[in-house]
Image (cartoon, rainbow over all chains, first blue to last red; front, side):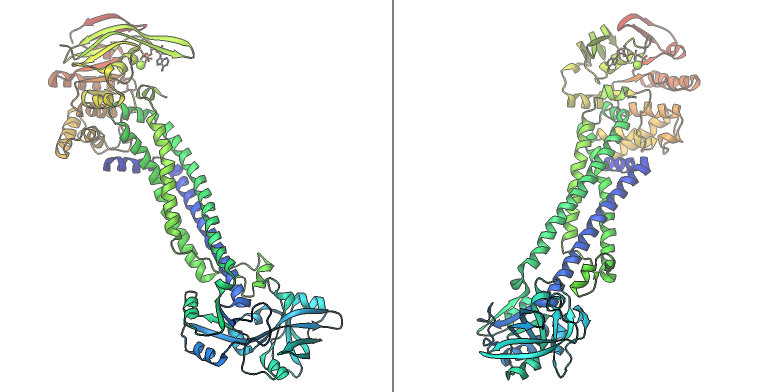
Length: 403
Length: 229
Ligand SMILES: Nc1ncnc2c1ncn2[C@@H]1O[C@H](COP(=O)(O)OP(=O)(O)OP(=O)(O)O)[C@@H](O)[C@H]1O
Ligand SMILES: [Mg+2]
């Protein structure tokens, strides 16, 4: 057995160029596959982060009744006690209370129904990236005329520019409020509907306009890490409120990862299949070249099992060299790129609207390398079987005569 | 009792409906200790006969008995095992595993027989010495001359302690001096160790060294003579 392995190993290096090419193609194929996987996860991650920081946050708290209708009377019950808890929970990295309500926005040219979020700019800048999404103007600095930030599409519809006045009216606890605002900033976002239908104002302006104070319709929370999200969700005691994590609010975001995972493994499978055809082809050539040698071995009494194993070992070793090198190479590469990031700004203007930069950080999920490793082993063995069977079919008398 | 006995061997190759009668009723007996040359023009059936005697090919008709075993009754796997333990082979070329040294090549056959390591080692060295290659034991085939490679092949053929050695044109790729040198080694092993050799050849100088000459023509034995050397 040991001798068979020794012979198989040495046989690989009889044609160094050919074997090296096979090994190199494995390395490149596997590395390309894994790198692609890492980048895809990186982009997904970016998308997820973009959603979390632009509108989702990790955890949101609302009054149970708040729901879709967003009536202003449904404040978070016992807001102060909830806020006190958040200060105590170590997994909470940042939180921001908001007033959220429906209203209408009007310019001299047009009008539109919108959702308005009244934010505390200090706290909110820690949980959302609105500031980075601005393409024009400034953040919500205190002004004599209340500032408002609207989306680019809404600005187009209203035909307003920075510094122009708009009127916003809304109901607060049944009382009609109508106020003048100055457009302070215009943002761009890839989040669905956000650009057309969301506007941001200052929390203190809202309180001044309505006389409400120390309340909130929504608390947006950012956790210290993704696993901490559920810990926070568990820890908060807020009767009369619903506490929802980002996965509750947008399950499709997490599903993307799962789906991506499957697609990637199909792609990896296709790459490996292509590689295995290369290996099979090479080994068939090898057998053709060594017909007389194999015939001699059979003639002098090498049994079929040993002939089979000899060819099998040689083929498996080919992939056993290329596979790990490819995997090692690509995981080093991913690790490196994970630290430095890949700047995709030149590739897609669209990435900017994520609002968290166009640099993506490739990564792999836990266990991915193991699974790819298993796939490589399976493919290695599968592609070894056909050539080995082919070798068995040789007839000694004909093989030794072969030219 | 002869160690090889063939009865009425016929071999017909069918090639695209063209039938080639390679052997036409060959009956031959070989005794232990013979040093026999199978000769004849190209295409006369020498290789076919040796292959059938060696269990590498089946006759269309007829029987081959080796010792007291009728090898036509053996299955493929039994035949491989039978060859391993009973027959030594030397071919015209491609005798050796190129990635193993001379000694490893000789040991390889004993390895397949599951002989103890110490015996393998000792026997391989003794055999290589017997063919005059004690200095070349650790060389790979491509580092050796054609004649040296054929001598390793002879040593390898003997390693399994076979009943006889079949050599199909073992000298065909050698110049005449090297060819005679190989023949001398075989003849010495035959004389001193009693090893039975059956070899085919075209070369008159090689034929001159044989003690029995069987001549084939068109698959028929046309003469079978003994000669003194
Ligand atoms: N596999 C085969 N298929 C068809 N015909 C074959 C086959 N092998 C051998 N023959 C034919 O059988 C006949 C005997 O061939 P064989 O090789 O036994 O002759 P030989 O005496 O060894 O010749 P040489 O001296 O050239 O080696 C030849 O006519 C050859 O063409
Ligand atoms: Mg021949």
